[in-house]
Length: 64
Image (tube, rainbow, N blue to C red; front, side):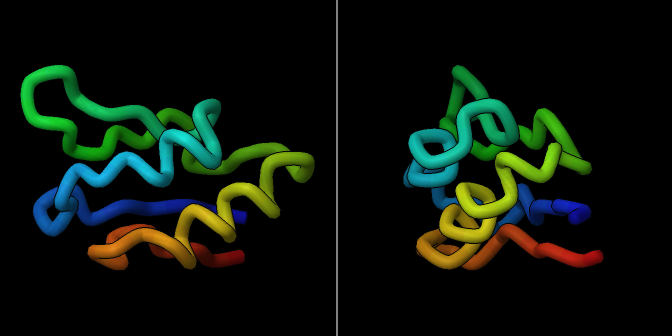
């Protein structure tokens, strides 16, 4: 799995960080998403998929 984010469209909701803190973080100054791991290990894939599904701004893209 490969993960990418469009930080320009991020609204800073933080749901991704709550669901997959090893993959996503937020900038201190404005809460915008920071991608920590663009190719997370298999055991995190379900959490990353859920984070992408619940992202209110739909900024998380997943690919193989």
